Length: 486
Image 1 (tube, one colour):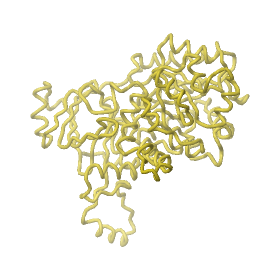
Image 2 (spheres, rainbow, N blue to C red):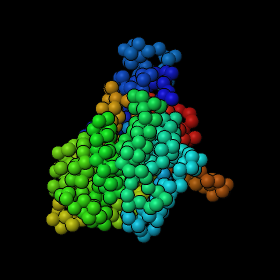
Image 3 (cartoon, rainbow, N blue to C red):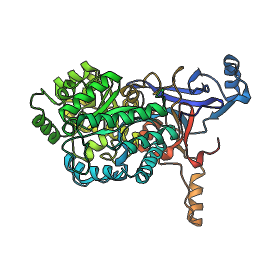
Image 4 (cartoon, rainbow, N blue to C red):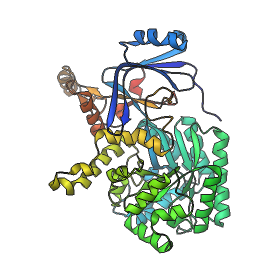
């Protein structure tokens, strides 16, 4: 099985918005972007009035004929935006999204998470869950995701198969956990058996996508307490020998940190545990990083490891508030994660707005000093984390996250609800007929808003109804029924 190829070149025309830097969005209006059959951006024309002008300016340069090009133009209220990157999500936990009660992390794992993950060893159930989580995340504009699977080899391979078939970029990891787990859900047989099962999933992904263009493996020790030192050491050697990415959890919860101190008494701190086993590298994604010390942040920066910020789950499970500004100021790369199902939503846009709100809670103690900027994150900054920042965390920053020649077309068409003078009359008609009219989403634009204000309204009010179409590497992978025609 290999990712499908495109049959035609593509031309996109309209407004393109992407992150230029951490705190700046770039707005290209009346622009055109050309995508070749490999899914790469081959030309950007910043000033063209319409489709005809774009074709006239670009086709001769590219040697394209009109019959060999598909054209998609923005409608009123629409714009193209890079696909979102989810740097931390647990695919098998998706059925539990929104179910966490009053649990804290360790209790929640035993009450909700482990039973659900263990139940997905049955392929029919796993197919239902994994198929839906891939569909749902694509519907929210997630074009790339770092997925945790379960300890089961077949179910992990199935998740990789489904991601490839759907066209969603995915790093898929078989979860390794050979201690402190319930008897019904534990990696048995010692480090050699753990590695052998992990190698089966690695080999499978390399068979179905040899270049790793869409699907690739990622080593996944669940978190330090769940793995024996021998298994951690073996995974560190494997990561080095095969240059594999690694994903795990770090300093999410104070109870977890206390457990790490008890289990690894010789380590200086939690981050040093991973470092001692060779698991803290430039290809490591550390979820949460809520309660880090200065020494840990310095070590993470030195090793080039990255952080997946998960504001939804950190709030839902009362784990704490990650100091994202503090991390960025120390040179640590940060992306956003939904952390389903500790997080209740599979939407990276939801993670972006919650990142804004959590940063404001962190800033409140500074208000009296007039120095809230020491913690707050802007709309522009969280959109950077959701796209370019996440791409950097997953090592995809040269491929996706923005609109530049040479990058691949991972993008979403966003549509906002344009309110006009006819809407009052429409309300009267609805009252008479009883019909419910789809308003196209929760973001109402009246026409006088500046573009930065429109984007802010989208971040704070938007949802999947605004995500009209989604492409990965030039391939259309999601389309809302209301957007069937251009």
